[in-house]
Length: 338
Image 1 (cartoon, rainbow, N blue to C red):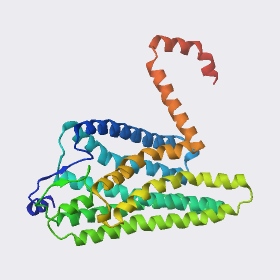
Image 2 (cartoon, rainbow, N blue to C red):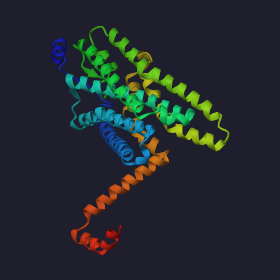
Image 3 (cartoon, helix red, strand yellow):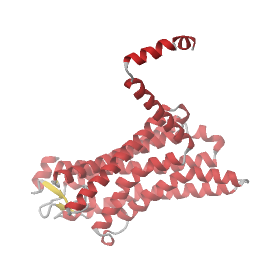
Image 4 (tube, helix red, strand yellow):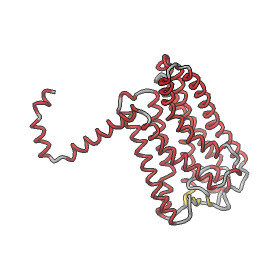
């Protein structure tokens, strides 16, 4: 496949122009995105560890949250580190193979992200509208199927994108008006007819963005009607609060991706597309851990327990052997008794 691509295109590499060509702005962007990536990685990994370590969080809801955190971490890792390396080395080139690989994994994790959020909306729908049958409906088998089916579906869709890209010829400009390899900027560089690619992009966007978004709206329409039937004001407030975190994620993700992939491309300038891409590749994955943890008492408690355990282990490993032995001998009776 790679040999076929090299035979069809004279461009051995592409140039990622990035977010800015000003060296001073690039230094600022490097510091900003480095901090964002570290916060994203730490936040999402802590969410995964907290859910895995706390037995009280072994529920379908937190199972999907952990999967979302994993996908967000992978999505950000696929794009941001390469941009940071390009800024640091002052080299914006990327080989054809690396470009196609980055494009594949960007769409692979992006599709999973979109479908998982719709799956989480269904989980909220069952929990609020059918609470007595929740454990029966959301069985472990169904949860595993709903969580990992998007991975299989995304694999074939992303692979089809790459196979269609291989059929194109890039013999003109090799400068990509973006900070990572995405379909739309690459299609503009092709010297051949891209009608089939654009049709497939629009079709896939309809399947992985529009359809899940409609399912989310339908789920929350039923949820709203069910909540309004709750007699007490406190009950309605509590029910709405359980959905607020998920609704925030929905607004952040779909508010940017639908505009980029479902609206006609002439409407958007390259800068607007970059700004939208920053939202769903950097900002949203960074905010998701805060959205889910700050508004969730159980998850906050699990995170505190996880951090306290880490601090305790660090404390034990940094103590001097003499003080540790002395403390152990002093309290040997209580340990034996325990």
